[in-house]
Amino acid sequence: MSEEIRLYPSNWWYNAGVIGLMRVFQSINNIEESFLQDDGCIKIDRNIFEKINVDKNYFSEGKVSSIVCNSPIYKNYLQKSWEPSFKYFINHLKTLAQYDDCGICGRGFYLPDNIINSCQDESKENLKKFLQGIRMLDVRLNNNLAPSKKLFPNSFWNYNSSLKVCDLCGYILIHHHIPFESAKTQSGEIFINAPSFKVMWYLNKFAEQMLSKNKSYQIREILGMSFIEFSQKVAVTLGTWSMMNIEMIIKNGDRIYYYSLPIEITRVLLQKDIASLISSTNEPIVLETILSGKFSQLITLSHDVVRSLITKTKAGAVSQLKNNDSFSLERLSEILPELYARINYITNREVIL
Ligand SMILES: [Zn+2]
Image (cartoon, rainbow, N blue to C red; front, side, top):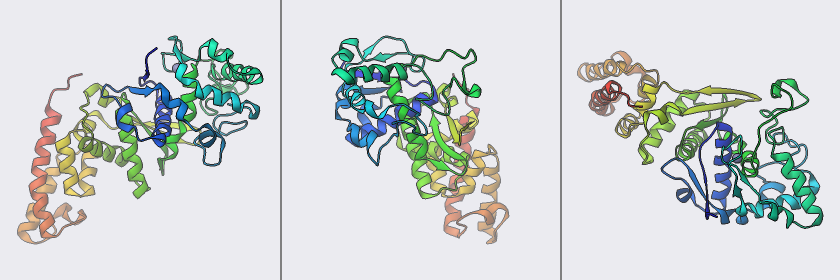
């Protein structure tokens, strides 16, 4: 058995669960760098499951997931009397065996039968009931999204089937709310989904950092500014296909919305040199112009800046700048033409998928 478990990105719900679980792991020890892989997957050391403080993380006041009885998101995930079985389950996750049978992750990690049978007396029966419950997708794993046999709108079309869920996914999914809850915007709770866990880890972190300073950012600004931070701070080059598959999931009550930036804007913002130039302008109007895709307005702004410097007046769009003293205008007059030229180069370059 391999010492590590590798997880690959799948749908946004699972991905948010993995990012949430990684936050739990990070609270055990700072392992950020070691689990994020450049190929987009996550590498988990099997021994980490034994280090999880189950009482603290799931049963006490500051818990990361509310999972016992009638909890709002993970309804009836666990009965009160099953708590010892759940602890046994977590402590033995290091023994997971892969059976390639799971409708969520496509890989399928299950607790081996001999481990289940080694569980003590009453706990063993409860462990079996618990596993039977999480191995089918229903309200235990997500009260809002999963099918329910009683309520038609959430039910699968043929009423009696669901997706098969492996034991590891049954555990991962109870963490999916964590990144959403730490990124609250005016439009709802957000999660940035991408085809790489490394990209998701950092984009969501940057979005949260921004929101912790200012809750009034628009969805478009949050995504754009996360891209700018990412390209300047994280050494990962993304292909066009990856860029096309970055989307923001917005959860408002039990409604889900999706938002993504047009690919040409994403390509521009994910260029390190362009991101640095945008940051160095320190002018929201520059980012706003780029986010709206009206790149040629940067040239108009550049002309207005130069005109203002010559005439000592506030020509055109200069009056909308945050800083329009002569020193700031001089700097801007140098940055804007270069910024426009680089954007032009990127947007005219052939897209290779
Ligand atoms: Zn799975």
